[in-house]
Length: 216
Image (tube, rainbow, N blue to C red; front, side, top):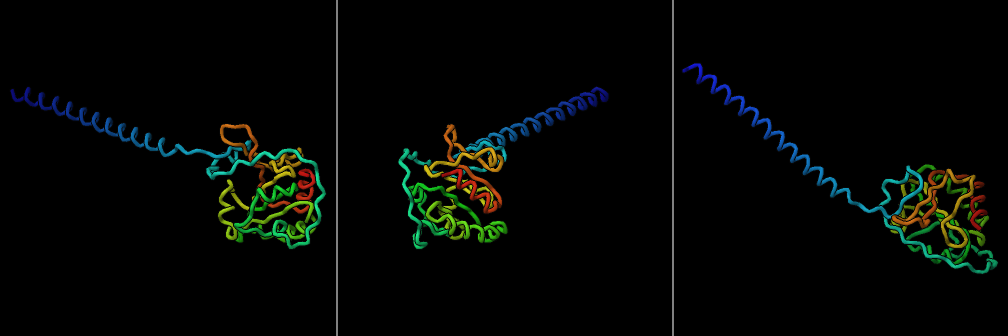
């Protein structure tokens, strides 16, 4: 009798152990499913723009305003600026009005930078010279993160220096074969429409002049 009782207790103990393991495993799976579901909910973000280059597919959550289509107009000769027109001043603050700049029907290069960016600082002297050389023929703007935080935050800037290119028709620049590898072409989400053309990193003045010529 004693032996049978011990056997029964042993069997009950094994059953209790198996049941305990099952409950622990089931509880863990439920927690995992809950965490996974929560993570999926958190991942439901909407990208405003996509880009053709994989390196820029992530972190483009900043809203951008859809550029308005500019109807073709007859070319008019632009009188050189005296240097006092704010539209042609190199350094911009939050008063910058991109739509107003497009009205000049000139190529536009916006350079987004910051004081802690060594390449931005290195580019400034060349930009100042280029701005004087191209005044009345193109618009060069340096947009500092500290001086124009609101305007800066409108765009999917992923590093500095970041350069945005807009042609004389007020549309995103379509690069030639020479500069295709340097450019990031953004499109609106769920659309094939070309939204932005940007490059990242330092460019020499000669390269910028060539790009301006392509955008005329």
